[in-house]
Image (cartoon, one colour):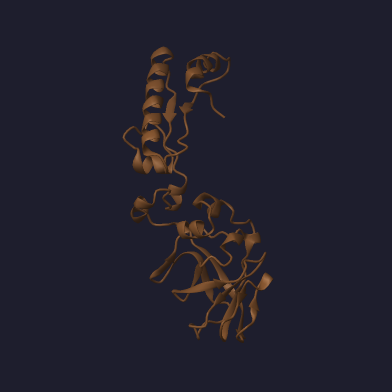
Amino acid sequence: MGVLEEEALAVFKEVNALPNIKVHSVSTHLPVSNEDENFTREELRTFGKLIRRLRAEFPGDYKAHALQTAGVLAFAEEPFEIVRPGMLIYGISSLPEFQSLLRPAMTWKTRIALIRDMPAGHGISYGRSFITPRKMRIATLSCGYADGYPRHLSNRGISVLVGGQRCALLGRVTMDLIMIDVSNLPGAAVDDEVVLMGRQGDEEICCAELAERAETITWEVTTRIGARVRRVYL
């Protein structure tokens, strides 16, 4: 949505001359800040050079900004006047090496809606993509892809947390429900709290883990959580 570097001066001059317009800021985007360090550093160097030319030719109090989450964490030598932390506000890093410095702010929870003791050889969820290899205790959770829980997590080895323990998701994620294995949790009961993303006890299901198993990115996991999921702000 921007303009090419070689056109920037001319476009700025034209916009700056418009009546009743005051330029607030000039920005650029870092498209590979979590993938290509050399390209990103060169992009920032070029942008800084452009800003200096703009300010020399068109003095004003307009600001400059380029750094989003990855930029703030790894390329903050030239922060300009404004930064744009997105995932960073959630305590999520797009660069795995910085995650230990952050504490995730979002926890995604649901509850157990039903528990059934199932025999060996029984199909779980649509498509019978998971067949119980033995007697198993199966809990059904009131959450599904209509709430934003990725359907691509079906049969991908992901877990949820119940009582501070990991419990494997079984079979396909459905529109409103998912099924998990609580065979090792004899005390699990209907209405127990379940953590889909976040910490419970000493265990944690991080956003990056969900994204990796679903073959997507953390941005999609957080932004697709549906409107019917109740928000609680602390």
